[in-house]
Length: 191
Image: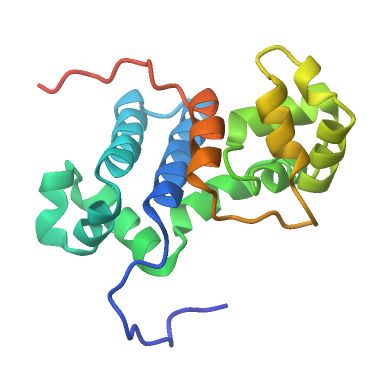
């Protein structure tokens, strides 16, 4: 759907801070997998951590360009995040995902499954969709993989239908997000 003729009637966020953080972490992972600039990757990760730390107030700040320095955002990244917060999607992220295999892209529709994890699930379990991932979890195959346990398997087993819910609970956020993202990578020191 082309959004250009649509008139913005609200300046309220169209997406939650957890979802913003997930998109930013996924952008960082996709850029890293493509051999992108380490400083750019670090900025995406830092922005995601900022959203997780500040929560809902970060959404309002992202909509106001004057507050971007408080979020440590430059003009380019700030504009992308404003698009994400305002519209619920970011064209840059859509472009990055377009280069992925279809199965990996479908698996990333499961909350907490980023590109690296989606590739791993596809290769090691042969799953190509959220429904196949749920079936594999119900059969007990997920917990057999190194680094996966019964909690993650139970979370995947609860996936229902071809399109799983995109808004996670706080418990799901704590369960799924840390294992996918590399928090311990050192960010480059500011000059």
